[in-house]
Image 1 (cartoon, rainbow, N blue to C red):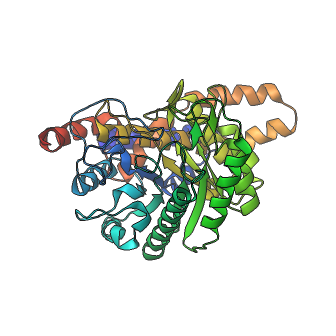
Image 2 (cartoon, one colour; image 1 turned 135 degrees about the vertical axis):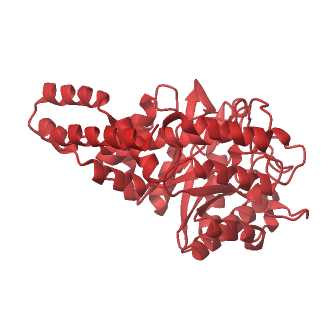
Image 3 (cartoon, rainbow, N blue to C red; image 1 turned 180 degrees about the vertical axis):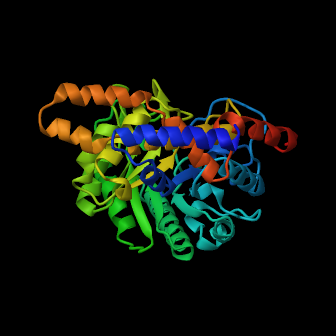
Length: 417
């Protein structure tokens, strides 16, 4: 699209939105301040740098075999920077503990140190990025079906030590980069079949968490991630929704809401305003479950649209940390980043362009027909012209122009791997 065409379309959209009391410039300013945390594991299908064969275990599975996956730290970083160049705005990168710069050494997970991630910190600083972190309990000889809730104290202690060290690494990232790092704790712990000692396993997990969070780090935002069930662990999940929500509220930390971790008839958006009444912040993993936690690339569907609306309409943007979480190995991986990130941004832009003052007025005065009518009308407003202008302002490809950029990178870089 030509710049003149984009500007003309934006001016028309700006005037149209003004008619319903919406300031597009204010919406664009707010969108500029929304940083997405790009998940590094989309580059290499959650392989990491510990295990050469990249075999996944512990309820994790990436499907597909599209050519060109990243094979080492340099390729992961190159792919992230390429994706970043095609996504307007300023963003973050979320790392798992298995992505350390181990320089060929065998470093077990209870031995990781900030030094193994210093090159990531330097890289982030050089590329105007902030970092978030995740402890990694899966794909390890001591993972099994249970980690922090294992009956074996030695195994629990191993994972407690790993998680404390992961939070220490996140603290160093936050300190050096001047932005608190979110540390997310997700474990796969559960059982494939009927379990009779649920209370016992959950008491073990609670004790492990108490030991982990007894260590305080001022540059970390801690989150605990609930799950419905894991692949191969369908009958019992130790870290259920109720468990982690109770633990987070009691201890003043965040609950992490992954859109794929709920029953297919549940919608994640409705949980946000309820939780924010009882905890300081929340962490999101924006994904697209098909049937269940299949981690498809995010698209602009109703679930993501309603998620953004709930956050914006509750004036909760400063209290919500937004991360992406999907690992689709069946399509171009850089393209997956761009599609998912832009879809998420578009959902938030639509919410920011809502005439919320007028909608609240209708609702508070019982004019429900008017509220419904306006909600329907704004679906057809020219929000995409505003997003194209946002891309132009950020010197990133407009509309579908990024497709050619992704194809070029594939020809010149990923196809040669």
